[in-house]
Figure (tube, rainbow, N blue to C red):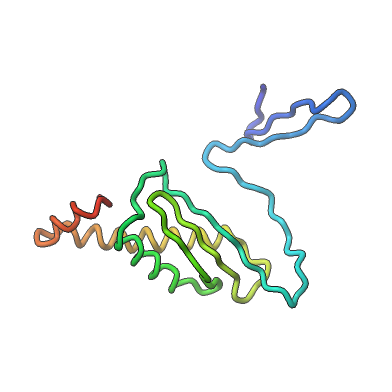
Length: 141
């Protein structure tokens, strides 16, 4: 099938309808933004799953959990209601604190960035001679 520059292809659904368009992005899917249709008196709550690159099992340790707690505490426009860290992904139930139309992508980007920064700080500290064995035992490096 011929793809255009955006990675989209038109394909026939049936003989009577116009062709449907499917987009296949190289790195990750970008689903369409769904507006908040809930009444104002109802809270907006999201269930989010974030996977580790190449599904590497690097989250099943206290370093990753500590990094998650620190990252979650830094969120200004989101509240983490619950979370579960699995070896290669995490699940989060989260809610925007101010703007009901806040983008969930902003939440996940901030959470991943702050977790990455915290783990990088720990990785740098582990490179010191007295922490080398701890770093090797964590499996993060």
